[in-house]
Length: 316
Image 1: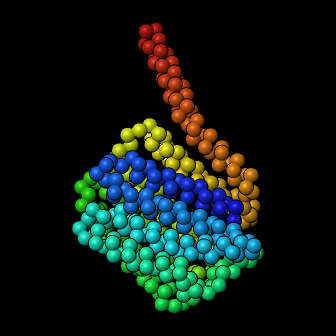
Image 2: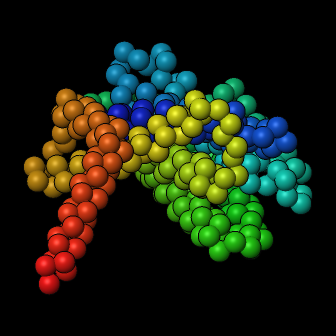
Image 3: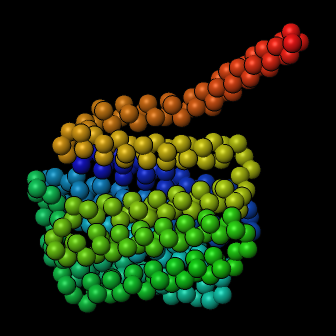
């Protein structure tokens, strides 16, 4: 659980920073468009924090747990509505479709906060794992139907963008993002919608984590294909932070999997996790200097070989 909490906390910060950079660094003409991306990043962050607080809540937190559960459901709705706004706002019928889903999403969110008993019956906090007893009602089916409609709409607009793109290089990025969103949405369907019906809430953290990875991937493609104008130095610094920290997170996941395999499923202690994370950050910071030293060493070796070759030729 410690690893999950650290992972969710770190990725939530990266997701928020990605949205903030896109919003602040976008050109004036696309500021409104980038606001949808920032909104998606905000709700992805809220979703992860809510799940993190829910999974780690103790019985004495029962008074506050209801808010965490409500935001766990509400954030997912507002995240996808914002995502649709980002990919469809400038397209044909995009504004109308986004507005419709936004209104429907807000109606669902309002109902969840005013009448939560229509969606779930009870919140259980136990040492074996926290869970929520769902209420299979019209609200739950409306909740599922919302995602059943908005996810295909997002994928269709991503597909249209892929078809319209002429550059093969950009097409590759669009294809990765489309497949990534489709894959992460499938994960959400399984671990955040289907498994909770059977009382299994142990994997709900995986859904927002997967969608947040997609958002960070969106940010990377924006940066790579220069669709974002980073005019100031501090925005560029934040961009490097996001990229370096993303690499560190990938390393931590691989490290944890290897640790669990070697030590029969046990997880590394929080001290080991933090130490490894800091070591990765130090390595990434020093990497430019290491590369520079390697280049200098390579040039010196190449220079020595050239001198020896010339000496042999003159002797001959």
